[in-house]
Image 1: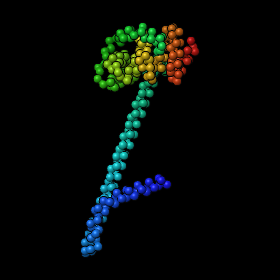
Image 2: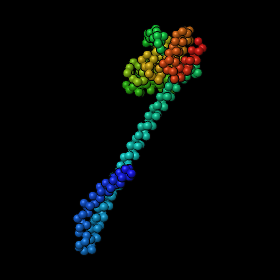
Image 3: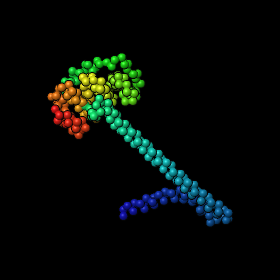
Image 4: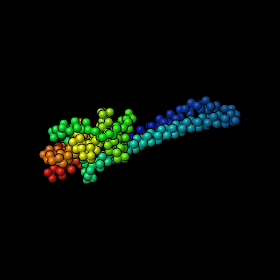
Length: 267
């Protein structure tokens, strides 16, 4: 009832708003329609009709303009949503491709660092990682743009398979952009690439950096788990078990936790 009343009231208001200009425009001619010759009266009526037609055309044009603006905004919203979905999908693909670089394809969720065990490992391997060299590979020229340099390093690893160059590029990136949101990913990339080259101490250092400095990063569970794997491969079973337990405790719903449970059960 109230809704219908509001609807009629709104319609009446619009009608008054539309009719007012007509009345203002046509008032003088209408007062003279009844006098004068037939030709004068016809001319007056034509003038009134033209004024009304012009007003209707203006209203229709305004409605068309408003509709175009709405359609344009809707298109922009859809485009922004599409771009956001593309960014999210690319991030997922990057994570999957990082994990696929492991020496064994079955290790899709890689590793980790946590607690005192990880801290001790990071301390002992930090110097060697900081001073490690990738041979004579020169650092790629920086573009000065954070996104471009990160994507360039990723491309070296994924597309060009130039792993030494990729290591150098990621090392240069984390030094040049210490506040970058890509820091967790860049350190994880370094850990994975160095692990693939058999440099497990250096790999442990970078994995531990991810866990220690970026514990809320999506790569933190994998980095922690990976440290446990490296400790197990080095025969440090007690430390490996402690790290696996930390993965399960801190990241219980992650894929890394599932892998950690299997590893822990085998110890």
